[in-house]
Length: 328
Image (cartoon, rainbow, N blue to C red):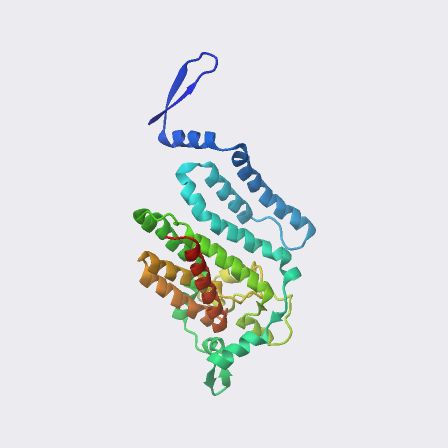
């Protein structure tokens, strides 16, 4: 318990109140905020779903969903809970911003996208990584579609589905366990690396738009069809095993079909590997995470090896830039 004291203007007497430490810290934190800091988060939390609602009135790209309110609600709530959860607010902020940026892409992707590359990634993989068979030279993706196994389906889909939660949990361990023990000030760097590698990847979707391998398998290497809906590709085998429609529904909400390059599915695990070796923790797990994701991306027919190399390069670039700008 702590005491909060202030001067009563009318009586001139000092008044003391015994308060719970959380409430004491919150009142002190609130009193130190400027008027802008007090009201701006609430305005932003209201403006975000309002803007989505406004855009839905002028487009046919979908309106408000529960996750829009969830995103705004989490951000606003964590801010107004004060100093005790400030670290959690700063930790989750990059993740929430990534969600906002990704969701917004549906409104402008068709307006700024450049030439869509359908043939080039396919023939690159077939030339440099192709596998010779009795049916001719196949890309690794094509070869794997002829050599599937239920156990590989389950393992691959699990990692492919959980790649963001796994990375966030790894970052949480670095931030709240390792960094706290070592008094590392740049504890939120892995999450900001996540944000920047996404921004870099999303921008690439437009200056080098590329069709995924499942698109070529289904529609060939001809001119891109912009009306094509996203596909779960090899992940539907998971739905077939367990009798669900989870992945068909999830990929139906994808923001951009022609965003195969780079593979962000492998960029996050490689960031985890780099930070794991920096912090000296979770190194084996992060390596397993990375190599399993590389395999899964190809096996499930979502990415070429070219996409994996590109995504891995972006992860290294972002890591090196952040390391150069901020010392541990």
